[in-house]
Every structure is written in structure tokens, then in C-alpha cells.
Image (cartoon, rainbow, N blue to C red; front, side, top):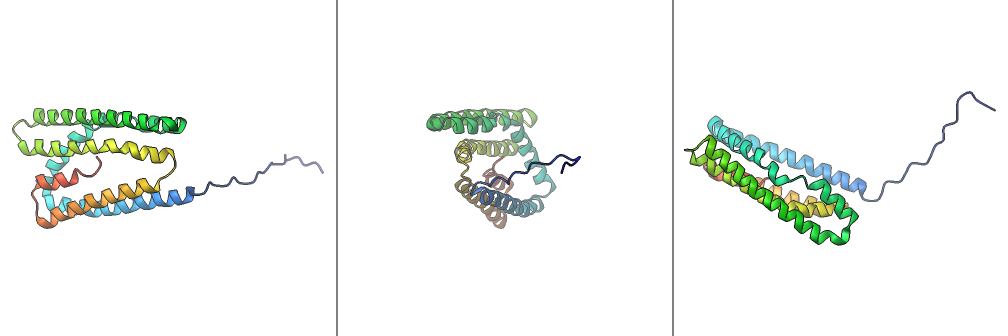
Length: 195
């Protein structure tokens, strides 16, 4: 019996590869946990620093944030693509990317500290804060290892390492808050967080 409506061809739904659902849940859980803990710790820091200390910290973070663009060097998607295409070249690709990130970090430190010196030449506290925060960009060179795990769709080791690093940084911030540390020390501890 002919119908005036065409028959739709239906296909069976594709199977989702094993582990994809688990990776999604792990990434989502990691993100929610880090956001919740980060929010609580940051609210405490804001209340503790007061308007002047928070303004100083925000100014230093802004300078470093602008300069940290140099440390990123736009490698993530290119590196992951190349690691997928050429897994045998992984050691060379990772070493090159880490070297580029370290060089970008050095540029970021110079740019941020130069901007601090130009904008507030007589303020050694601001320069100290900027140097501490900007030096944290050197640790971002290790992100290239995370890109290798991402290229292999193996998120668990990466998420565990990132989660542990975050908890250590949050714990250091809380310890500084409980000890009544001055702003220079508190900012040094917040520099452990990825900018």
C-alpha cells in the first residue's frame, strides 16, 4: 500500500564505546567538586583579605592573567591532534611542547613583572605578588602530560593528579588562613592554582 508519506529509514543506535560514560561522570564530578571547594575557599579569602588586600590580589592576578597568555602558546589542540596521528613521536612532541610552554612561561614572568614595575614602580608588595603568581605558570608546562592522556582518552590518571594538586593547593590556602598569614604568603599559596 503506497502512502503519500515517504518511509523513514531507521537505523539502530550506535553503541557508545565502553568507558565514555565513566569518563563523562568522572570529569563532571571533578569539575563540580573543584568548583564547590574553590568557591568556599575563595569566599573565605575574600572575607579575610578585606577590600585593600583583595584589590591588591586582584590587580596582581590581572597582570599575570594578561601575561599568562604567552605561556599558553596555543598548543593544546595541535598537540593532541599530533599525538593521535603520530603516537610513535609522542616523546619528541611532548618534550617540544613542554619546552615551548617553559619558554612562554619565562616570557609571561617578564611581561607581568615589567608591567608591575611600570604601573607601580615603588610598590614592592605588588611586584612580589606578581612574581609569585607568574612563577606558577612554569608548572603549566606539565600540562603536556595531560594532553597525552587526553589523546588516549584516558582521563582517570589525569583527573586524579589534577584533583590531588587542587586539594593540596586548597589545603595550603586554608592553612594560611587559619595561621593568619600576611597577604604575600597567602598569595604565594594561591599561586599553586592554575592561572
